[in-house]
Length: 145
Image (cartoon, rainbow, N blue to C red; front, top):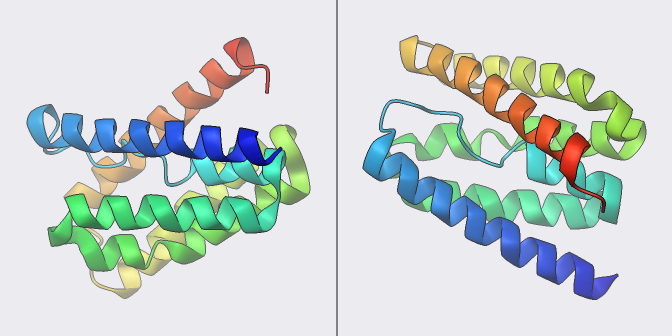
């Protein structure tokens, strides 16, 4: 189990770094193409609460380093990531859409509170929702862990 956790964490960190590179080079205006929801949510199901939260924090740090201009908004995504972990742990795979909706609502509240609600945030909601639904579709159809 420890090997699975370390292997999957390494893979997801690499994918996160790759997504950040793609975002910087090709998708400058497309916010929400990240693993901040999906990876902690699926880790909560597979490895439990603390491991999922640890992964979420690692991914948040990566996201902040590559997006310093949005660092405060990414840092304040912690409540949304925490809710994704809680819902993943409590509801499992069947709770994906509920967890995603709660994650996005929590993101709306924290971003609005810190003055970040605007056109770019709406793009985050759209792209983030579609990206996570796409990841979930891939997970359901191809992943066996």
